[in-house]
Image 1 (cartoon, rainbow over the protein chains, first blue to last red):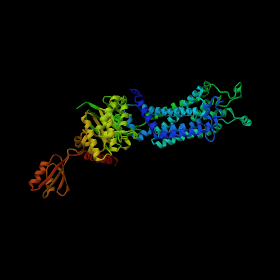
Image 2: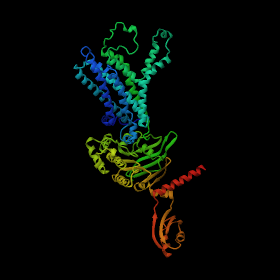
Image 3: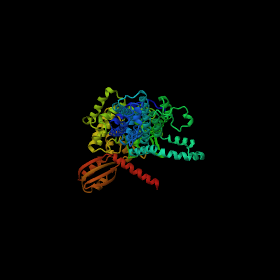
Image 4: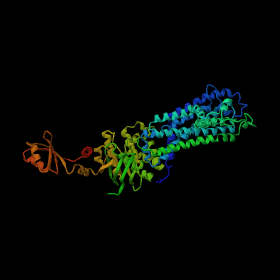
Length: 321
Length: 317
């Protein structure tokens, strides 16, 4: 086996810094940011109207701010779950094929750097851009909250939201790496964007509808369960397992547990588990984290797997189109 | 001559079943301008990419500056400047910013960066537009910016892929001058092109690629001897009765064509100019013009592909 010399990370920061500057200055990013800010403002505005009445009595008013939905607007967190993938795909869909289309790839690779630096640099720049956007957005929400509600957020609320933002970042990372994988596989930026968006729509909208049907096929419910009108636990287990293949359901579940401290379980709850429980009592942060730990690991693992696949495909790709 | 800078031995590159380059063996010496010549798809760019370690070699060995580009690509890429075919830049950045990005990747220390960028831009005549976005640049300016990058790198070897294709005659001329300047700096230049006239003027030696193989290798004169044999053409313009017969009678002349009124084209085995002049003048004719038609690369090229073509036809029938 040929062993390569020199560090594969040589030039990584140069690429990252350049890509980050590109992202932050790009018209595309500005459009996406305004989209997020305006929808978030609309959702928050409606929530502020009602939440002011319960500010004094609610210990988690800043979490409510994120999770409360005021029809017709969905909650801020749900909107974020919808818009973050859009932003991530928007940043990643032409990461690699854009270099080919601008005919800069061979010039870039003829500099003394490895391909690792190009791919990782682009990934890190995308993540940094998303992190900056998410952090800025959250700070805006907190600022608006301080002005409108007049109560500072409590330490635990801040901790919960920070963990939530980290998970949102991992969730965004999945879509970013997916979009980058598309940009490695397809030479046309339009194809890559369409495939990325198509996969996102499929996994976010269609998969949750398909999962129960598939579960019924794989593990048909018992006649007894049918007679009693209760869901069969095996079918339910399958349904949940299948639904969790989609990153959006992983993210949705962790959002639920983190931003709503009263959440005790994400699956079906048995009567035995409710013994001695104080209904509606909030869990401490540590316990909420324990609930979403598998989801968090799943999201991070998804990023790593997708990045590895992109990396492998990209390393073997011919420089010439 | 200097020691070999690039050595390739039995270089092969296969894409699946298709062989892009087969058994290419050549050596490029220090300070030389070496041309890769051939029609599109003949394997020139593939060979260049293998030299830079940008694509894997199927078999054979390469040494660039005594290093293996497959094993130590970064060390090779540090010393070799590459300008790809139809080079691209980041349109949203200015020429200076584009070069600054490359300079950082090259590892040029911060203190020396600005000076080297300026010097390179100055040399290719882009100093005045260095602050403009590359999106506004013409093809010729982009090519020059690509060369500026190679100059900035202070590379010992410059590899230029199709540097003059798509340029207008004046821009191509300027570009050839810039390449010549590189030679005076002692840079070894490897360039590929199918612009024969340009190659003939600038290259010390050329390798003619045909269907992935190096068909001919050597200086233009050597190639002429290989392809055209010892034959040479002489163009004569003369007024004389029976000029055609007179010229045909000269010893060593194999063929005479009438190329126009009073104009003749001789194909001879050796230099027959003095005999031809003597024959015409002694017959009472007027010799208006006579020149030795040195075979150009285009003649060699066309002749080679004609014969290669007929051989292929023979092989198929």
